[in-house]
Length: 128
Image 1 (tube, rainbow, N blue to C red):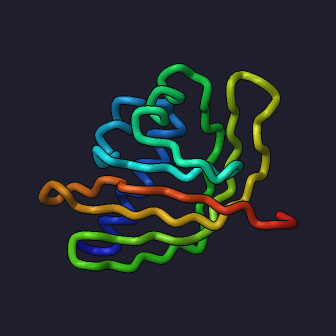
Image 2 (spheres, rainbow, N blue to C red):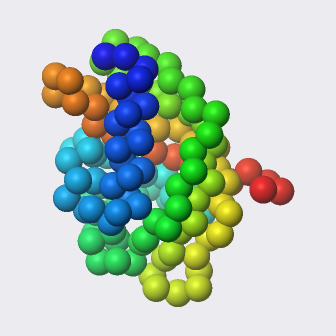
């Protein structure tokens, strides 16, 4: 696997979030996927993340990654960079406009030729 394959999978994940395609997101996540919530730092397991997307409580309006770097470790990749996103949560005005995070995503190629996202974490950047 190459770094460009890992970046393509990362982009596919973002596009699936933007389109609200929960079934596609589901195929891109490892069975034990874990998200670290960018706002509170809590662990959000795969099932809870998918439920939030499917129920419409969590909606991604825009995702703009930049400065992405890929480190490969055999059949695993760690992608770091920053991401600006607009996110709506629970149908309220709690959208997070201009949220800028330092992001780390870990992917593994559990199936030959197919990257799956194992974890994701965002950290707010003060003053952004």
